Length: 302
Image (cartoon, rainbow, N blue to C red; front, side, top):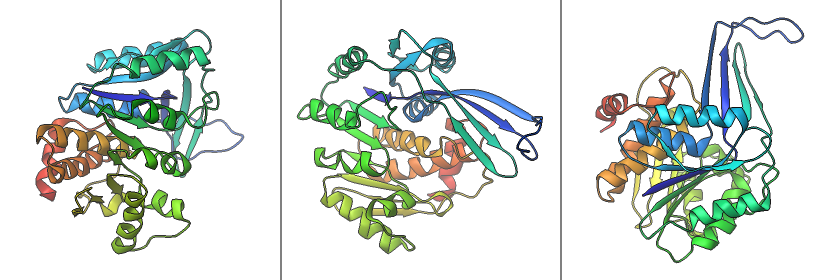
């Protein structure tokens, strides 16, 4: 079974307008409300690809109910911890002459509710896959990723981590099955600017030396690189297409990788190309990737 965890879900209010005038009245020419968060996005794309998963995390208030309503319509299973107060945050993504994001804080999460999440995670069994993704709200301990991975050590669970900087570096000692930084995040971890594939590979190997089994580096329009635990490496250019919406593209790459890995019984090459195609399919669409979109792009990079 596949599980995803989103510690700080959100309703994304996405708007478009010709230009944003500070201090004035602005009128939109497009708006959409989408339930999301990195782990939830992974579960949605998995469902689009025909792969079942269960979305875990914390939900509160009327915004949390809307996320659940949307997931039901998208055939996504969930088992969220319901918080008694507050509401799931709202993120506003403004697309105008410049892109602006305003992200909400999220509700308070008590120790008792954290324990409920741990109890759900204790049900995972050997060969299950767990995706830990995204930021941590300020009401959770900074080491929540580490606590979860330490708790699940020795159970034979494949853990995929999609996080940045310190969050990611601190979990490498628990030997995650897969991590997915982008090339800029990879450079920031080591205080360098990476300009070539060779430099990216060199520093990705450093993450493997620190414990990561497989490292998938997304490079936006330049494609992606995968380094496997067996010492193999794969590179693919990005499929050609028009960037419509970059929100969720990285999460879609993770979902595509899981889909390819699952359907091929562990073939990393298949998983890699499926991941690249799925991430691009979301970037080229108003919504998250669907199977037909992915299959069409997959033919262009294989």
